Length: 425
Image (cartoon, rainbow, N blue to C red; front, side):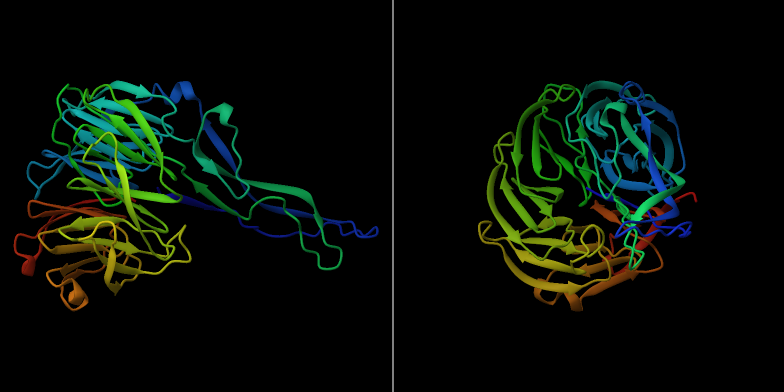
């Protein structure tokens, strides 16, 4: 899951008094501080509702289900886009869900996280969704570090409000260095995300998520990953998800991608491969270890593709595409790497590989010859920000800081822009 970064930096230092009695000194300083703004649990759990369409402001995850695109507005809810005509998509509604980060759907049910809760929503009428079920505390509470402390009894933290504070702090008498007893950098870490489900007693076709998803659906199972665990839910009755198990995977788990009868789970240290032939009881096969870096994953045929980036919180990583042969799932073997600028999500369809390279735009490669993929770039759409993609039926859906884009790639040598829903500044 993604981390949000809040920076607590001293604005200025004012020396009001410097006194030395033996080794004890004090300095009075003024600095920025961030304090939590709470929403009560009662208000949180009564807040899910349909609202009129809203402009995209801070889009996150994307998901396709039928003729609809669902776009997460980070921590706010979900935009519903009618995509009957990809050349003219219509923003038709918004679902208010405080704390939402992830989405998935099957049948007429949408799964969404709301901070630590999991909600299942009936979307048979996209203009008027209803809550089918809410599972409280299905996921870990968000964890705040670097001196940002919250009182869990007061509810969830909606934001951190900036405040100027002046106070006396202990200092080194010789150097004047101040001992803050608090972090100078605020890293708001999300320890979990959630998903939701729909209402039937038979298995239905799920939608399609991007490579940065933290939960996904396969057959009658909903899978959710948090920082260290795989949560498995039985959604045979999709309106009534039932917890089956929690499996500890490792640490710094980031994404999950289903392919055929397997799950590929990305972490900052490697990709874990699970057999989910029995959807409610996935079994570990192997792990492909790599340098510490953030890594969305996609798979096609006998190859696994993932991007590595040194973006926060993976500052020690590298920026590249890595291609791994998974013919033998128990022994994944690296085949090649391609340098990138700061890659994020990716997707592949019929050996056409799409890579989001942040502010360096969208890059498209012919992956027919994986060993020479670096020399087979088909297109490069620069001057846009790209975060994740979903290629499907010759239409590429791409989300970034600039908005929601759709491209026609039926002719990969002449990929054309179909439409764009911009982000409102």
